[in-house]
Length: 548
Image (tube, helix red, strand yellow):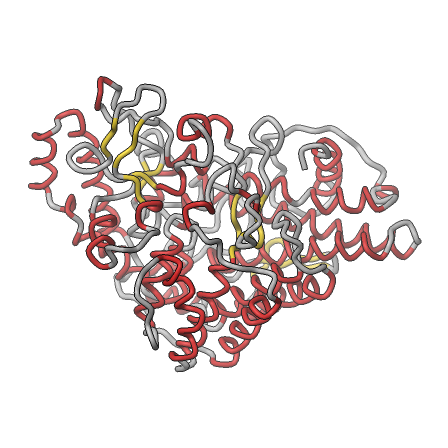
């Protein structure tokens, strides 16, 4: 994408400036004017127009963590002052103008608008003979896959949302959950038909990527997502709703996951730790676990770069040890218990030491820095790039790691979860145990639902799954209030560690404050995010979610 970025950006802006969208992207001004009748003149411009949808999605790569991970027991944020958007989400105090909600909601719709324009313009050019059959399928298939993906995030995070396509719709009238999911399924089914098989390049959407997203959509839809009225009934309570499932949809989740599995084109990488980092991105090792990724060339080339390493490693090796300053990262592991509890439950799990870093050697000064009490909490190891020399230091500046949207492990676990909910636990073991075997831990002959939930945590911690899983399982409040068991939920422990290492005293007090805020603030209304303002602060005219 780097070589064609200026063309893509120009086409992208031409598309969104003439279509119904919530707000213009104020970050990038571009006055390019393109004759709409000639937007697509050949195969290259067809593909370039489709690629314009990536600009908004690139902006969201790390931003998803500031909702999906912060609103769980897995992450807290000390990004800037306490009233800024990261800490606000960490404490469950989000409102309509909280930046990450504003950003994600609006840019998803901006991407959708580009997808709508792509489908319209490429289809017109195809009918006029300007675009080949292969380019038509690649461009429209890509647009439909990305539109389905965007609506899938919207319906999971905001519930009933407006739906508009190239055929019409409304930017303000909310559609039912079932209608939104039906739109997602239509788009992804069309994408499955149009796109080619996975070629080993996860940057290019494929038939198997569409099937994996269909499996994801049906799995979530199969748990009967809460309606607006159901959320309203629990909005001000700390009681999770009852779980119910739809067997037909869960069967479809399994069916589509099985299509990916049976294609024989995907596989688990031999080494879990080599899935994350610049030198391992986008299947560079050729092991075919990365199924769909959002490409990043860094801030100098695309819309924003992927700041995932930056956010979890903002101030490397600055925990006060070895004469360094004490700084707090934008996102933080909330307590040592996440490492300790996993170590106690699965001491041989190879994924643990990649997921949590508790000790690190700075390649510049060769000093060891400790990320454990009383000095600090562990570091998110998936955001600590170890894939090339000195990468722990450099990647926070480059911000160029591709975002993994789907990897094959998700497909296997989706198949297993659907089968367990269909009471086919022994059959689920076939897929479930592939993850366990790679991790070096004992297989299970018939995994339980509790086993499935634990495996999502072991496999996907900090991969932007947490909140969406707890929405699906309807255990959000119970999950968040698990922080009451954490070591630094206790003020006496905060005091003891502050005395043991005074440089970290303010840090431990922040940890304590955020853990208690999570416990106290989480409510039923948090099964939805607030309908936000537009990017320039305007009211979007969409009915607000209950409790906000």
